[in-house]
Image (cartoon, rainbow, N blue to C red):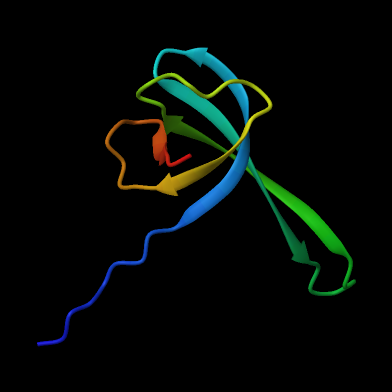
Length: 80
């Protein structure tokens, strides 16, 4: 049997809301090229992330690790 290593997706984003207990809202932006026009467009997604120690504050850039859903809203946990 071959060992298959699971690839963990990580995203870099900035905190836009830290008002909830142990949860932050992270805005993840990525640049993609438009298929027809060719112009570079900024696409963004907001994720709720688990912040156990409540260290993340607004306008801080951080690394978000994508995890299996363990709550309805939370899609990741903070790495740094």
